[in-house]
Image (cartoon, rainbow over all chains, first blue to last red):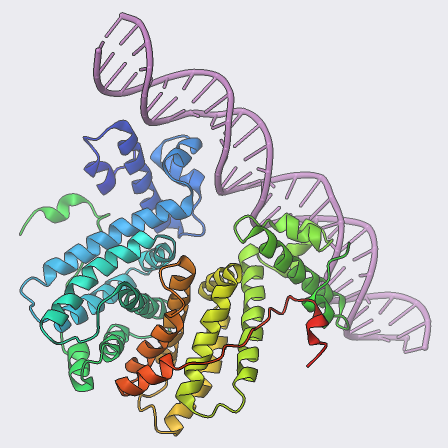
Length: 225
Length: 225
DNA sequence: TCCAATATTGAGATAACTCCCATTTTTTTG
DNA sequence: CAAAAAAATGGGAGTTATCTCAATATTGGA
């Protein structure tokens, strides 16, 4: 049985190299999900993609690299979905709180992918940058709205992303409960010198979290609206 | 030439197991320092410690584990030295600022060990806990002194440690300059709702950083005072 | 159709890690 | 306190995984 999945589907009309690469990524998703990151072997990924062992190394340097890339794609997909869910939400602080809490809630509902994403984040600066871009937009909006006075620069955004990842890790380890998202949101807002009462309000308000889906699901999810 | 170093010296009068373990740790220090973490091989460490390959695995699960343990010991040594340097410093916030800036300055002056420590931090929860313990003492002092109003719990301390590590990583990557220590200190103090002006003062005041030494130096460093 | 460029292959080199038995160290017993 | 039993340790050959590279196959353009 030939492996196929979202990456393969996406690359259907590209050249052979891209198609093989996509098959390897779909296979990696499969194997990581089945065996976990540590136990997964490059051989097994190659076997599942029905390519020779050496072919893997033409496309990816090692297991970390493919994990990083797959994780980055998943993270990108999730953040896009979160953006979708926030259409019409205008307050910058509310947007930041929603995105943070939704991201942590999702990643901790899928512990395996949560770990892969965290692991990838420490390897692939690109992934940090990706999250930073999304986050940056809301933070700068906050500055325009006059809610944030601190200057938004790379160091600050990197720090915030690290705090969110730390909260996610604590959640996955079981050291923090479902309130982790709210807590870290409040801490970040305090850090930005938002008045404590407002920070608390934003971080702990009732919100309805969406049920996000992994891009690794069969495409049938796109049927009805 | 038989390897010997601080761990071996320390274990001189312990049982054979402890002595072999110590030799492996000294050898690991040597090899990591010479070849870097990735290039270091377990065989090379075992050879340098003059034990058989398999003996390594009696004492440590793998390369990560020994790196984590060595890094934890070095981090412990550094934090002890920082504590020494802070004797007589009574203000909790000043203490926190000094320790943070000194730690980042030291670890970024020894990039190899900086990376090993960061790597270890994600493997060895014990190491986080170690830093948390030291930090916790100062934070709780700050609460007693009435400077900090936030409640000091595990989540908060974990978040702070993660912020410090993130700043260190940014420094090592070259994304942040020597001011990284001050910046992260200020951000943490803001997060704790310290008045911004005071936070800025604490974080950016002139301090004299000590020249810390790795525990891996020959013991001759202890000659004169 | 042919050719140059590109992609794939898989056996082999190297390193990580396991396993079992001889030896050493520690504990128990007479 | 000495000898025997039990436990821990060390050695190194063997197994498995990672990664490379020279040979082979495929592709797509002229």
